[in-house]
Image (cartoon, rainbow, N blue to C red; front, side, top):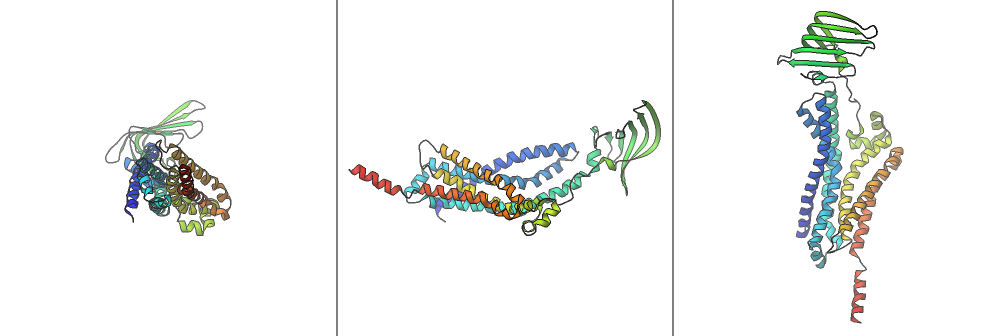
Length: 378
């Protein structure tokens, strides 16, 4: 590989790493804040929050890598142009096609990284995330065993524990049950234990009182008890789905058996085939974005006033490809036979980059140069 190619490739990789780090951090923080609020409110520890955040990271990286490749391509091309490095290299005979070689290699490297993410890491991480969500959705200790806080595990039930001893004993427990229409029952206990049996978890309250209020007649009846067993299995509901979803099925399964995969996930075969081919399309899109960012800035050539218009033009092309990507979604999901449309955004983007490079090369420039030379001589 030529020395100049290695130089440009190194610049692209450094800029790509910077933009990827910034964009991943922004999206990851936004996602982590919502995840932190939801899990902490359910009583889970910070370690569980970090585990869920790490498992969601590959999907975030997949989303931002094509944008990072585009930003790196635009930034490096603009810097090389501003420092007149491209002008010097072109004066030695390098055409825009020849200068595109390190950008093409850079896009292939990013596409390879994207392929590892879309085919391996993202499905596995989402599958593990779903397993952990299912395991934690029925975590009784996280939902109920929090001292000094009024908890509302389900509608109509309020639970409070003043203190939890190291031995697992609950001190000064208050349980309000308003699920029965026209009736409000409040259980108070000095001590309590949370036990499990074959029928589910039970709350064993010792030395307490039950206050039953009839809301229609406004009559209150109280009962003192030395021990009372309260079934708390209904206070913890499992909300995580047990069926597999398309986004963590294998690519081979999605492409070869779209009907079976869609039936298991309760989606359409079009959605299954689209999910499978998107795992090939996204790496191609990263390559396409890299070439679009480079070729759009090469059209204008060197200018003392910068390449602001070319950068805006490149962003416009990026938006156009993304709009095209959204436009083909509904037809593919509606008809499995239209799956080649998934690759239309990348094909259109590559065609646009090729046309821009052809314009940047300007094969008719020598003819104009000769005409200007003849005019000057005359």
